[in-house]
Image 1 (cartoon, rainbow, N blue to C red):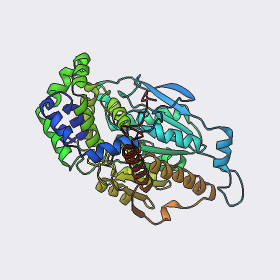
Image 2 (image 1 turned 30 degrees about the vertical axis):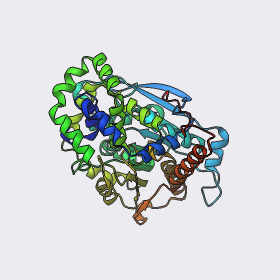
Image 3 (image 1 turned 90 degrees about the vertical axis):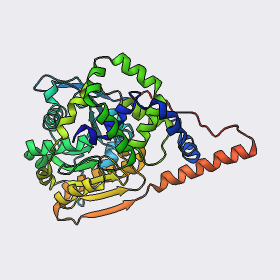
Image 4 (image 1 turned 120 degrees about the horizontal axis):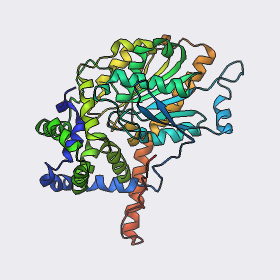
Length: 421
């Protein structure tokens, strides 16, 4: 995947100030109804989670990976293990391992971590090398194959035994495939469930649609590594540029990451994660996507219950990429979400949470009852986040009623804090 094909890099390029003159005009074109929906969806819920454990896993090439673990209460774990088998025995609960995507960090999983923990499961989240709180590697180590080895190191250190459910978003899903290619025995024997969220097995071009993706590609074509490289040595300058172009930055992040209204605090949270990734790391990872193709590794997940989950309006990994995954894994379930973009776990968290919990439950039951999951029929469903739509409509109506009756001057809710995980 060349730089000009990557809308995530387009986001970074957009913040460099080249479009500062048109930022106000573009932002002003956003419909008032959309702004009202964003305000209505705002909640006081914290975008924060305190892990029960923090660890550092040292890779064989000396990179310190930051890992966080969330532990369920004994009561929640007992509920999760209760009754999944026909003979009434207690099933072994898997550990869920969450792997984030390119330019993100483990912070992007805040909603899923909370939900899976409350559902009774032990959850491991980690920052890929060069991202979040993990250390950097050598420039030539920023490859899908290398991060696949990193995932294996995390598992070996913190989940050396027992069943696993692997969940990967975007590059995180590619990391899972690299693990399957490198250690097929581990995947076949221990991975009972796998979720490929807004990802691609490779073999076709990424970022192949959308006017905003085109804008991002054009900006990066003009700027590209020639600008990202020098700016990476002057982080204070990049910080100042980001501050000046904050409104445009939020606009670009929202347009590239989401396809439906989300709270303004979630846009800020996402922007801070995406654009907090060091520019040299962003640049150095680019070449790993060129010619990326892990489709042969899909077969290593044939023993697992597999969920393929993506947004219909995802401009980086559209449904055609997910369809390749489904074709390569017998029995996979494919969920396509209307009005959903690439960062779907922050856009439709409740919907994804429900499907992930169902996946872990099904994987636990399949292992306990020795079900041949590869014999299950493939399923493809197009769904709409009805609960979110209803909540948005209700909140907008309540805000309009308050304005009409004069009991409030604005429909603005108290914004959520976004300290980060």
